[in-house]
Amino acid sequence: MNAVDLIVEGDAWSSLEGKTRLVEQAISAACMELPDRAPGVVAILLGDDEAIAVLNAQFRGKTGPTNVLSFPAGEHADNHLGDIAIAHGVVMREADGRAIDLADHLRHLVVHGFLHLQGYDHQHDDEAEEMEALECRVLARLGVANPYANEDPGAALLSE
Image (cartoon, rainbow, N blue to C red; front, side, top):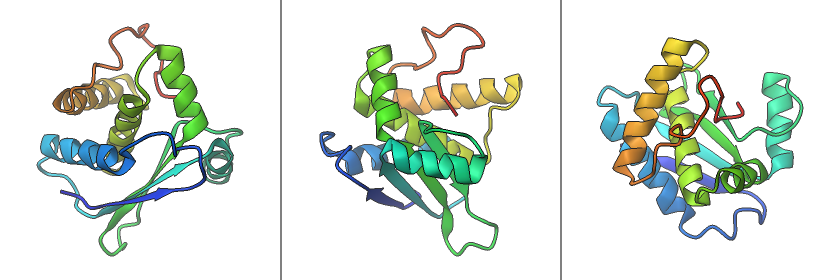
């Protein structure tokens, strides 16, 4: 399994119990679906919208926060696979808007970010289908419902 370094900044995430366990379970379940995964430590930042908006502007040139950002480590990083940053406000609004549990949505975004660190993407329809199917298999291991089940075709669940 890949090791997880969880960093929680601010009070926004304080109401969610068992954050470390949820994140570790999500990474572990993803690892079970990826026998040929790249090893290494994954740093996960649970931050507020302002912090993620700064990262989104700095690294993607986009204004405002997004739900999840993934930053693969360079090829010479010593045992570091990459970083994932998740914005509390965006994630909470998405969970509320879809009437899903915050913990389940967090696990989905951790899995999504981890798959990006493993080289998966969703820029093209065939890539998106493969990545979504893999996410659904991982989430099923965790007892989390298919996040794409009630989605309109072509509509993006993730605001990335």
